[in-house]
Image 1: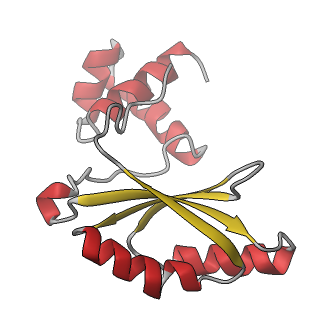
Image 2: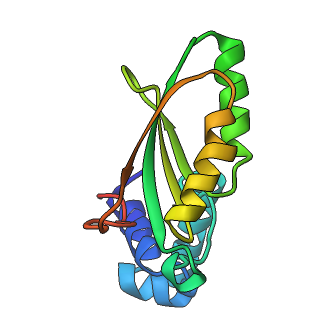
Length: 150
């Protein structure tokens, strides 16, 4: 991957709806080489897909929490069961496995505090292998959905 490929990626992260012609103009390439590079980036997996970025508040998800999860055991069966379980919870927007304690960080969005409590009690706390859940509420997003650095 060279500097031109990184420029293409930066432009697409800023506006994924660019046409190949617009993209080529922004990165100062002719259309054919730009299109070829774009196909290569897609084929190689640097571009995993294209999607709309939806504002959670606009669709009624006004409440966000970060949930720290510590597992009781970290054997393969427990980890797999937990990860499959958490992947099935639609309100979990992101889940990262961490080194150290806690074991996981979940980003959760709901309509309000009452909906979060219900989700917490009825789904999150019942996930397999959990020893402890700790939550903190998101006050505001300072950096959100920033393009990857070049």
